[in-house]
Image (tube, rainbow over all chains, first blue to last red; front, side, top):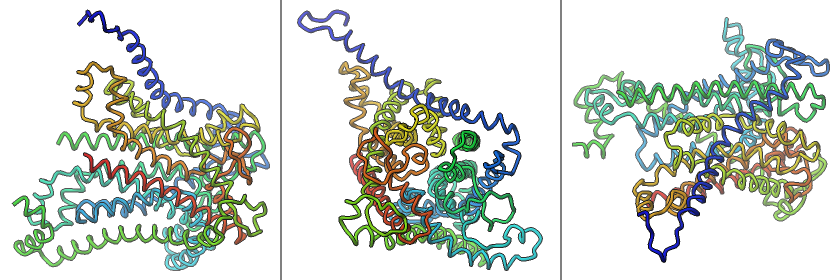
Length: 320
Length: 307
């Protein structure tokens, strides 16, 4: 192998160089992901420093947001992000898991394809279109619904506060509803994948023991896929927290901390988008960028936990 | 027995019910839960249909009713004045998304090649795979802020242009392209690579001539989905492309606009004329996004047939 016939040119050196070059460039492209993430963390933190210097820890603990007085507190925005994401998850989880179970356990195979396409189509609709639909079509119609629900629970101990006074359509609840539709595809698709890993033998075993289909699902399928579903839900939560435009249009953009889900509020991404145009002072821009940083850290924590949960769940399944 | 059980699930269960004498309560519960699962499907289908129907009915008249104007005239400057014309935003969306694709797709595929052909199970490749997941979860608005701080600010007012928007969208697309392409490269059978190596080809040649062509329908399908996603994004553009109402074909010079930005801006207005424009832009954007998604679908369907 070491000697080549005299009439053949030795291509090895040139080819080796090209091969190395190719390898090097793919490596650089891969490493770009690391570089971008480091750059995001670095540059966004740099630009957040002015507001942290002037507000300190109060940036996270104070409710008051008064740019005209140079008072910047992000607490009500953090609260709004948490509340809307939570509403979205609470509504979306039963629906998503229901769709995933229906698709994998009940639907015949010809229907299955269509059901998968259906949830994928929801993911194709741009978030700004959901926002437009929410603000012009949905929100005005919801005022009456909110009033009715408020009427039912008027004077109840806890629910009376949660479903409190309603007068506008752009609220935490509206934002949560729109978000719940938007995160359904991601939760459904992951839940579907996890559920499909449930061994046929487990399901047949349950049926053979005389279980109804629902008993087979609760006895065999759900325990098997619980970990993965929890992970899927957390990924949905992360997506809901970071969603900007749809929320910015329907949340009402008036920062508040209240248990009442029928009142207007604001969230981290929404305020950044909404007030960016009018933010001319350096400090206000810095405050908005600092909220972006907060969001970046929050979503990374949620997503990392979700990935860990999913990985642990799949390991456990493979081990069993 | 197994074949019978596979083929006839409903008969199998009703037979089981007959034989075991399942109590009425259990049977009702099963029925109710099945109905609830079906209800979940119906609800999502209903919402999707409702959204699409609203967009089509409200957007149709302005987009199709005055046919060429919507695509050939610039955007009305005063929100309260009627008048079709969304050319600036249509061109803006196309130009910005195209540039973002030119940046993100080659880099993403190259990154996927590194992960699947070179890195494999090495620690650094594992870290990158993990980080690609992390990056895919970063909210798009953070990408916009990042490009604003990193790219727009150093360039001052000249920084607000289509290219800055493309960079932000490319950051968004990169992890999606990397993840979907790697998935597709992994599906390429190892013996194809081995055959190529046995003929004396290097890894680069094998990748370019054997692995990538074999994986190309899947890779392209993943890229098309990433493009559809990027075309609909608004948040990253707010900080990067400025605001324009006249058509701007250049990505490097001058501010630009996009369909998504026009929807966002007009949705906030209380004038019916502005809202009308928002619906029209929404219809155009959805049509564009669906076009790419359907193309992706067709490609992956073809892929499934050839396998």
